[in-house]
Image 1: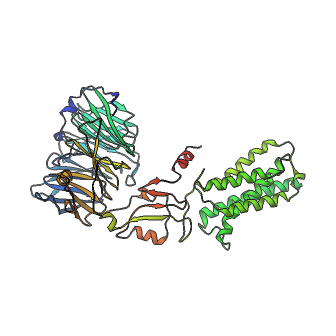
Image 2: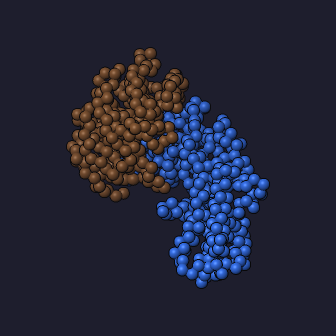
Image 3: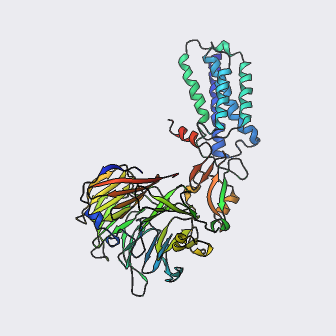
Length: 252
Length: 323
């Protein structure tokens, strides 16, 4: 398949190479990585499934892998996305805010904080110090809409009990996002926006890639995987440039 | 009042009547356009009045072309094109053609040439406007009442369909239909084909991702992997799939574990956005055991998972970019 070096990324990609499951762009203790818009997350041998206003927590049998319903959490709001943070924290993107939950010693989910925001769709990614949320008002029927939508929100989460809003950056219909080292990648209506987040709480726009319109993005090592309405794109980076390796389009 | 003015008023009245019947047909009494009139008659009244208006206007405004074959042909052609959903989505009714021919005969028998305007060629502009007015209503979605031709036919999956044995299709046979979420693990990439199945690609060579296997899993939107087990949702079921069996080629019914009715499921609105169903069908959509995946619209086109399929696809896509 063709290698087209379509893009130049103005960054030293130390970040991309340094990233792994531990930088928070992944799925915690699952074997592998889901995107930020996932509704499944495995942590500590439990599978958490988002089911409208419920979070269903299944214990996975270590022998035959079969799930057994362990707990059901009812939230008074629709849960859209789940993001495993470290080994014992989960961030839930709901239509009205982001819920920070820890798994306590008894294996139960415990609400730590709820970050209210405009009614919208909102995947979330985070590391130890910062949490990034995208708000989007259109598309899926579950998204609401208000003036404050269509932003990337940046929170200081040094204190998980009290996330602090640090910055808000306007983006058109932002969707999935991924954090990779010092870079934050955000899918939006006009492409893939790359932010420099070496200063965690003050992202700086580096470059937008208009050809890379996507719904969600996964970063793994030097590789990027994008999903969009047109198909799947595989990209790679050598530390200086970002290029398209191959595409799997509709009908292929 | 001069005869010419009377003729103008009459033409305008016919045009208004045509639009009025179309409007009633689409907005007020869906399926029963005019109370007291049978459906077949009421359905072709707009064509009748439109042809009366257009043909009269033609003869008055274009005295040198008293023959009505041009407007009649245009109108009939317009009706026939509707059979191909062009330029707007509409129903072809042979009775409309009869109505056009009848109205043309009526108008050609009237002594309109005596009222002809001699210096008003600009009035020709009226003709495309009148022709266009016929199409004005067609882009509106058509509500339906029970058993009426405007109702869409829902396409359901039942429990038997969604729980059919999962038979992996090894090799590069399946194609991606509706790209969904991704899952990356080691050198494979899971690609959800929304509500249809899961493609697994070997991405060792990034430039040549190889489709290893496709798993048809009705209702899938999400997945995760742990200890060589794949977890996916399948409408209301939570499904566990052994990846080892999939790799070893020993996949059979025992490789799949299904936790029945463990998840909630709501049909996405996009699956029936432009469809109108009978009361009975609407009831079924909300009942257990019926999973709506699409519908066949009144024009015979199939919509699956919110996307249009097969017939007339190219034609309509062309039509949609027209101004």
